[in-house]
Length: 470
Image (cartoon, rainbow, N blue to C red):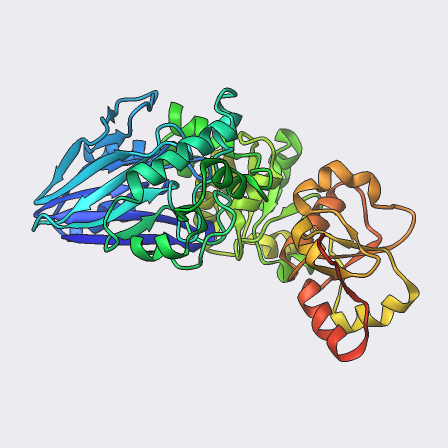
């Protein structure tokens, strides 16, 4: 038996490849499916099943394309109602892949159809559980997402289901089982996931707060629901795409991989009014970019911030990328359902600049310059999350979390200068590009963000203010 975790760090996602005796199965595949097909081909195996642990919210699964290209059967757990051909398993149903068996264990709570798959090896030994978002390493799946699609499925009701699933279906299983979750640290599907991506169930029973056997159901609910932040706005849209179906990725790629000269790019931008999305790193973008473009760099949590900042999932998008990053940008957009890329700037920003087109810049200062300016009490905006700000911040700074910036634009003055920063410079450049797009110009961004400010502060000043949380 071969069971491999395929981890994609930029969206903290884990898919699984299971192969035995010339047959294979994929669990929770990403949108781009060719790597799974290539892996099975190398093993001289046919992909027999595509198992889905639930209808995902944080990414668009590759189940439809994978089934179409391989003839595999898509499998969901009990209560699932997909809008396409699929096998809806019964609780306890067993599937055979070569000499390996996979048992579906219905574990509602994160969603109603959530299902854990118990993998039993060729010798009949229970090897591990592929848990989806039911059980993470150090955490469990948040129960507040389904209500954004089905109002009756309140977070309290789902939290109760999750308690029952963990106590009655997961915790009685052997301590020796390996836990294979769908996500790791950085995913918005939980609140305190470990950076580790596998563990034994026995260790999770000892260390995971949600598996504490002394918790009552009400205590479990309180522990689970306390501290949850609002989910990203694109989550319900991805759920619907996963339930109802979507356009083949090959079609998405064909439409997006249209190289445009600077002149043609300008014509399309003016006539069709798409969003011009620049995926270059913040440091590069700041030195020169197409006016009115928005920067969300590929070098960090790109998909998540696209989902947070671009409210219309059907938004037409023109891309500006580093040379050779066009295809990656289109794929990573499609992972979260942004399928309407209509072209990219051939030759990148250098071609635009060489054509003599108009350019804009963002002025940046380093932490030393910030330290020199701070005694004059400049207006400082911190675009980190509220929890980061509450933990520690520059005294006197105003907190406007990046994902709320459009709701708080009136707080940014146009009649006096201000300073912008985040934790390291990635999010503040997104904010800077949005402010530029909306007409703000008299501001500077701090290179290295709060991390650099704090390091400088340790050496020179005393203006970083820890906040005591009550």
